[in-house]
Every structure is written in C-alpha cells, then in structure tokens.
Amino acid sequence: MIALPRHAFRRSGVFALTITFLAGIGTSFGTVPSSAADQSTSWTVYHGDPAGSGDASSVSAVDTTTTAWTSPALDGQLYGEPLVSSGRVFVATENDTLYALSASNGSVIWSTHLGTPVPSGDLPCGDITPTVGITGTPVIDESRSEIFVVADEMVNGNPAHTLIGVNTASGKTEMTQDVDPSGSDPAALLQRTGLTLDAGNVVFAMGGNYGDCGAYRGRVGAVSETGGTPSFFTVDAASGDSQGSVWMGGAAPAVDADGHIWVGVGNGSVNTSGQPYDDSDSALELSSSLGLLQYFAPTTWAQNNANDLDMSTAPALLSDGQVVLAGKSRIAYLLDGSDLGGIGGQQAALRSGCTEDIDGGTAVVGTTVYLPCLAGIIAVQVTPSPPALRIEWNSGVGGGPPIVAGGLIWTMSQTGTLYGLDAATGKVRQQASIGVPANHFPTPSVGGGFLLAPSADHVAAFRTTSASAPTTSSPTTSIHSSQHAAVVARGTPGNVSPGAIVGIVAGVILIVALGGWLVWRGRRRIRRSA
View (tube, one colour):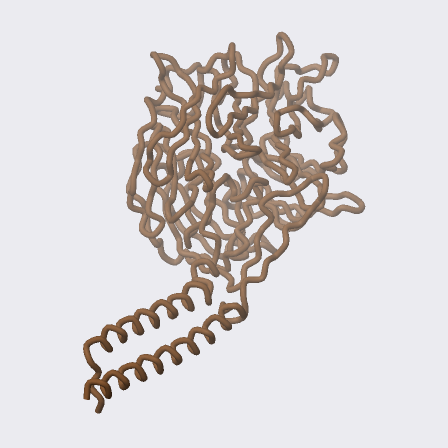
C-alpha cells in the first residue's frame, strides 16, 4: 500500500472539493427542483393573474381530507383574498394590519399595523363592523419585493384612504400616498375592489358603502408604484350626477395584454332614459392612462339604476376576444371585446337561472365562464359563431367567487364550507369546513403548495400536488389581438435537460483526469524522497 505524503492529502482535499462542486452543478443545473416542477409558488393578485382568470392550471389535486395548517386568529376580519410570494402568505385585516405568514405552517413571520381603522359608527352607513380598515385584496410586485394596500384610516380625526407600499421581506413601509379624490367625502367612499398593477401603476377602484348613502361617485384610480398624485376616471361625472360604484364584489379591475383596464360599474343616479347616459350599469374599457375607450350598457340601464341592479362582476375576458358580464339583474351578457357596442350592444344575453345576485370575480377556462351566483356557481359555455351563451350547470352550493385547481371548481359558502365542484357537472366532489367568513364574497387562492381559504379571522391551508409538466395559464388576455400564451416545455423526462447531461459527463471526465494526476504526482514525490 502506498502512503501519500502530507501535501498529497492537501491535494486530495482539493480533489474532494472539486467532486462536491461538480456534483452541486449537476444537482443545481441538471434538474428542475420538484417544487418548481410541481407548480407556480406565487399568487400575487386577485384571482391569480392580471385578467383575473382564477385558473391555477398547474395544480393536479387538492387534499381536503385534513387541514395542512391553520393560521393563528388575526386581529381583524378578512375581506380580501390571501396572496402568496416568496414562501409567504399575505393577508390584510379590517383593523388595518398586514400579515406575512409562513407558507409552510401558517405562523406569523411579521405583522405591520398601518393605521387606525375607521369605527363603523363614524360612517354614514355600511355593513362592515366594528371597524373599516383594509377591505380590498392587496397586490404584490415581486420585482420590487413590495405589497400594496389601500387602508381606510383615521387621519386627524377624519376617515381617509391611503395607498401604502410595504416591503414583503421586512414589513417596512416604503411608500404612502393619499388617494381620496379631490372634493370627495372620504366617509362616503369604500375601497372594495382588489388592487392590480398596470404600466408601473397601482390600479384600484372605489364606490359607496353598503346602502349607497352620502354623496359619492364611482372611481377607477391609478398611482405610480413610487407614489405621486393619483389619476382617476370618474363615473357619473356630470354636474348633479352621483353614485356609479365600481366594487365588483371585491374583484380587481381586469388588465388585458394591451394594458387596458376593464371594470363593471354599478347603478348610477340617472334613472330615466330621457337623461344623458352616465357610464353606469356598464362594462368599461379604459386605457392605462384611464381614458374611456369604449363601453357597454343594457337598454334597461336607467331602470336598473332605479332598482339598484348593479353590474357587479368583473368582466370575464376570454382568449378569443369575447367578454362576459353579469350582475344583480341575474342576466349574463356576451360582448365583443373589440366593439362593446355602447347601449344595447351585446352579442347575446342569457337569464342565468341564479336566484340571488351574481357578485364578484369569475373563473375562466377556455370558453367556459364560472359565475359567482350567491346561491351556487353557474357554469356558462360561450360559443363564438353564432355568438351565444348556454348554461352547463348550476351547483346550488357555494357561491363565493370561484377559482379552478386540480380539475375542480373551488368556491366558499356563507356558512364556511369550501367546496370542490366537478367541472363537467357541478356536483360536489370534495368539501371541508373552514369557519364562517366575514363577508359575502370570500374566495380561495393557490400558492406555495397549498390551497388557501380565508374565514372571518384566520386562513386554512390544504395541501396541493401538481402535474409533472404543467402548462402556464395566460397571465393576461388581449381583447384586440387575441394572443395566446405559449406553453414552454420544461426539460426531458426525469427533469434533466440535455445540456445538463452533457455537463455531467464532462464533469465525470474531469474528475477521472484530476484523480489520475493527483495519484501520479504523489507517487513521483515518494520516489524522489526515497
């Protein structure tokens, strides 16, 4: 047996480190980590993407047989959808507190109290109690590691709405900006919609409190992510007009691939057809600078205004350019996204069979739109030629704004039950009790390996599994170009790319050559010392 001198052991250490380094290269670059292959880990905006499709296509199954974790009770009611980024779950409360929870176990990583919420008794009306704080779902810009919320807070003894940017890693406040429109009464305004991002701006909308009390006008607002004076589009802007709430059951404005902003608008103050149209009871397409591009309203718009029959869903944007809109009239409208047609411009209309209001965000998969009827989800099939809508099924259970994951339609009921519905029939395939929610429009989300469902003051998580080679759902839908997102292949079977295989082979050859050289050098030095 040949004994190697001390300097040979030093070289063998280099040899071992080389092996470790090359092995690390093979592990890091030769395969896709299982978490990356399983699913996207982020859910950064209401219903998962700028268009609000609610389609978590990478998830192949959700396990509701047991709760993976439940967060601690938080300090206020939850009205928004949980968001997920960088291994953390973000939720905001009506006590003006923003939480970052561990996505793995639900524990609190940090919490930031952003202001003093408004006591419900200080508002002229409303149904959020005992305080009104952060109501709309926040939005996350992962490139900035920043989450944005609009907080209703007491400032100098009066209600005010403030856009706040918070660092997602530390909870530190990065930006604050007053977003109450000039001349408005902040006590009469409720920032109910989710927030979204478009062209470097945070986009949100406002309406009135429940009961439409006080003097207010519906608004769509935009503020630079770095702060600055907000811009607004105003509904019922004419002198003497009011209302026209943009609330959409908590959904965020939809953003298409052209950067255009789509909203549904509620009832305005104009209630006779002899008066000029006021942009109410409508679907509006706005430019990224909030200029009105086109609109649709039914011929019954004035009557709907008189009877509080809002358009109360976010416009559902289909990849072929069609748009579906619904609301409290319980009628679904099919629209041509390239030509909304103004008053009476629908391609088709369908009585939905819903016995309650249709409020909130929709889910869209291909040419099927899942509508959030409070009495149960309704699946509507869209055909382009001739343009038509057809009811596929009515679940009769759930009713909260739906999302799609694991081939099922997920919705929450007013009694706190999470349902997974068969996409083809609407039958209940899975269900779990999570606790009664705080609001009428609770909606789950998916991220970090879990389906997340909010109750009144905590978040329940259910483990998900994912397809081995998921496709990506279109993050945006271009209404005018009808572009489809490409599906990107992720390596070869076994998750090892051809380039990685070449690298591994080259590494083995290098290891063998280096080992032979070290042995030769050791023997040569031994002979010299003999």
